[in-house]
Length: 375
Image (cartoon, rainbow, N blue to C red; front, side, top):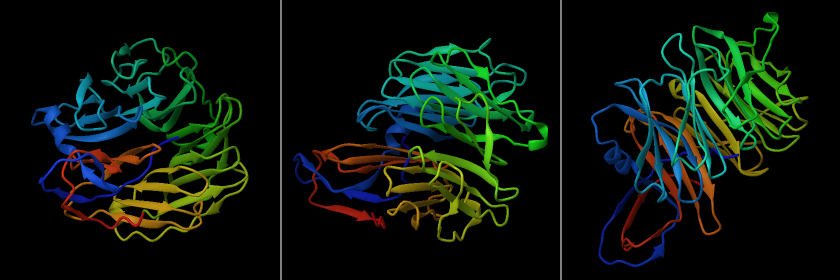
């Protein structure tokens, strides 16, 4: 499972000579390559970014002017980007991947039309549209998707005309056909679904606006396992192993973010220690992820948190400020033996950054790095 890290750094390189070296880990703004590739005056943001391998990445550009989206791909670790697919109408959408070949993009369409699933089985080179008779209800608004194999996956969301009506769909043929799974008791009031993850083909958890749900039979039935905070927004789930779950969201009072951990597969939960955030407008919880049992990361609209002790304590490593003029939406990472590279997605400020030890031929005699990484 990927999805980690946020941070900002400003770097200046002064060319005196060229030599191939590894520069120390730092954040580099690669927004220019994306702006050049778009080659338009559209207002846009970056979201849903994924590594396919150490050099190949895909992301979505949400284009506000035309309520559309473009899928772009880089094959040189983010140095240059190319449009690989465009969607004219995309209001609610999400993208997910499986290994280096499989990419799925889900989007709603005009009111009354079936939502679309668009997929690639060759790393984004060729795409197939599945627009009608794909099993989705009309007006389904996708929120998050997750594939546990290249054939078995789920997508969650809600009815765009009634956000309190939750929907979960499953595919067993790589996204060609979908079947609705979640049949709920109206008395339970599950709310709209926001995230989903499975550890294998049977066991998974999902977050909704009214709690955390678990399935042990591939999504055929779901049981609520957490709803300790009334009227909270539960927005993110992460499964580290068969026993260890993490969830994140926001409390109804002052939009206060929270993280809970379970060490017994959801039977009981412990709230984690999170530093207080001073700007509630930027405290919206986006995602939580762990690399291993110790190192974890949480992303909010304007904050990045990390832990080195399994979530017992969290630290704020970056706080957005007025100079950035935007907020953050998504992040992904790829670990290599020689260096670790991480990508950050800027939402309304059209900026994208990567982090890592990178081999370069640029001069390194003078590198100005203003940061507060604490990594």
